Length: 338
Ligand code: DAH
Image 1 (cartoon, protein in one colour):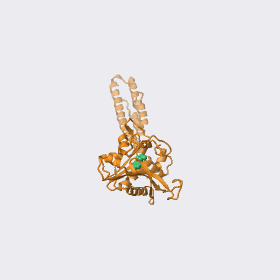
Image 2 (cartoon, rainbow, N blue to C red):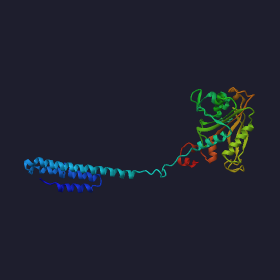
Image 3 (cartoon, helix red, strand yellow):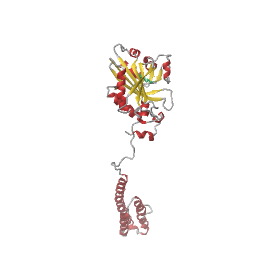
Image 4 (cartoon, rainbow, N blue to C red):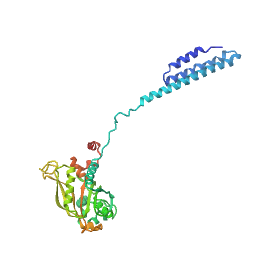
């Protein structure tokens, strides 16, 4: 009977030397595959005497099974080895700094939050109204009557005969007074829309409305609150100046200037040499508006103001073109990391 010990030695040695998956499949082809050494042993069957053929066949099968068993052992070793190499390669060090840069708040959001913070400190609550308004809230009950020339102060995007994109946050005054009895102290931040576009105007921008209704409210209260506001926004020594103006919903109406925080009032390019910068409009709430909301103007009075948030941001950050606040250029926006 033929002794297969030589082949067995070879199989052992070759398998021992196998170090990875491709060497393992080479081994399979050379020894266990169809054209491999062990299959080749069967060819010798021809020269084996007939009575020994069964024994010979069994011996070859035994060698094959033995070699297959060794092969499977090696195969699971190689698999485990390759997996551990892969784990090593793909390990992530979670303590490494992140390559992804962190975002930051938009300058408009920063200013809006700062404004809310200042007024919240004076006891204001925040209310937000709808961006689609009706004629009644946006105009008529604010004493901006139909066919009155003051309607042309704002170029309106009309949606239907009655509905429009709100041209200001002032309709928030009406909605607040409909919902609440005095004393009232609210801020209404939000987007507003006007058919208007140039370096300092955009068809969409943001405003912050303020409304106070209580007994004995005067223009002095307005100026006191706005002084606090500009000191917090611009500089501790900033003060305000009121100039007479006209808005249908306030009487008297004022345009509010802040003393130039760039030159301290001496005159510079930012304030165009005047020492003052216009920042917002306001006034004492028109009695007709209080009446339109069922509030007795003999008992209560109010003050109101409307601030353009982009305008404050442009002044504070020295931004010359309003478009920069809407174009979402990341180089520009990433400068506002707080
Ligand atoms: N709504 C006015 C505008 O958009 C701004 C404004 C002026 C609001 C005076 C007020 C105010 O509340 O009293 O032009």
